[in-house]
Length: 170
Image (cartoon, rainbow, N blue to C red; front, side, top):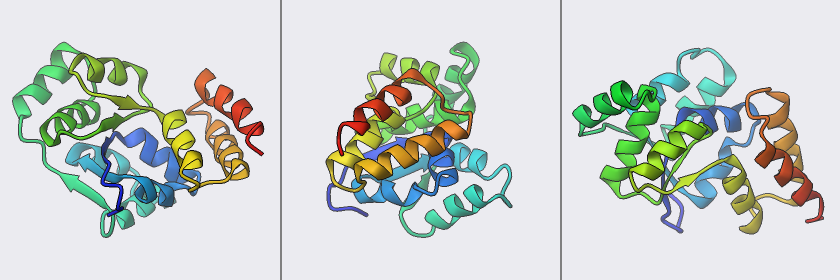
C-alpha cells in the first residue's frame, strides 16, 4: 500500500479503462484501492482478456477485494435507484469503510454516491492528481487520454478538456 493512505473504492469502469490503457500500475502510487466483490466479478467477465488478467494480478498485491456488509442497502440501490450491482456495492463499501471517495466513470452512479454523502472522483480527477503528484508527466497524461478516447468508452467533455489543459503543462 502507498504511504499517502488515501483509501478509494473503485467501480469497474476506471479499472478496466486504466488496464486497457496500460496505466493501471499508477493507481497504487497515490491511493489504497479497494473494490467490492461484484466489481471484481465485473472486471473478470472476460477473464482471458489482458485487462482482466492485469486486474486479477493486481488483487494479489495492491488491489483489495472486500465484501459489502449491508446487502439490503445494495439491494435497495439496485432496485429503487436503478444502479448496477457493482456501482451500488462500491457506494455502500465506500460508506462502510469511510473511504475518501468512490472512483467511477458512471455519471449516474456519481450522482447517487453524492446523494449518500460520498465524495466521487472521475478519471479526469485522478489523471490530474497523477500529474500533480509527478506520477505521470504531461506527455504521459496526453498519451493516457488518447488511449482512453480511442477505447470509445470514455469520450466525455471533461476528458477532452483535461487533454487541452495537459497540453499547457509541457
